[in-house]
Amino acid sequence: MGVKISQEIPFSQEELLMLEQRFRRLDKDGSGMLEPNEFFDIPELAQNPLVQRVISVFDKNKDGNISFYEFVTGISKLSEAGSEEDKMRFLFSIYDIENDGFISNGELFKVLKMMVGNNLTDVQLQQLVDRTIIRADEDFDGKISYEEFCKMIRDLEIGEKLTLHFK
Image (cartoon, rainbow, N blue to C red; front, side):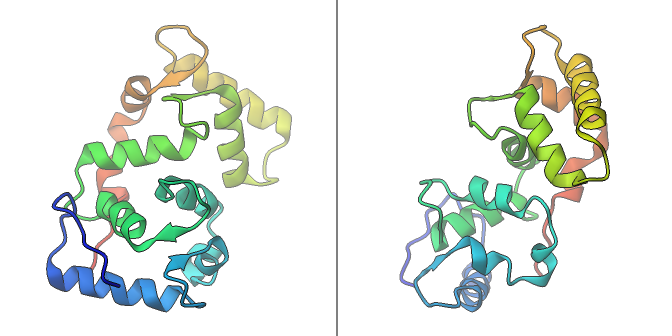
């Protein structure tokens, strides 16, 4: 691909080559970019209700596509070399749709709705969202900050659960 990867990426040359091969296989039209529909061709992701949010988080320049650099940068956060902080920030970003550093009631509702589908009514889901906000919102501003989010999920071993293993 000829893309020069910066020092911030924790992959060896061999791992980068492997990731480049995977990227090229996913890039069905050979555009050098992954479009959202190409992600849905991955069986493990096709049924994942949050795949669109993952794409959005990976898409740093917000052009609707994922470049190889964005792909590798995103994957690096979830790799074994990615820190617990990287994984927590990634997860927070899934919920922080507006990218303003907070999870609002509406954002939490939207993401949870993606996850539960029609298994809960909107009223039941809103009650769950309201309870979650009340429990996590320590400064009573009606939204969840990154720090409040971290406190709320600190015992869930997120680092291990969000780690991609490449071997």
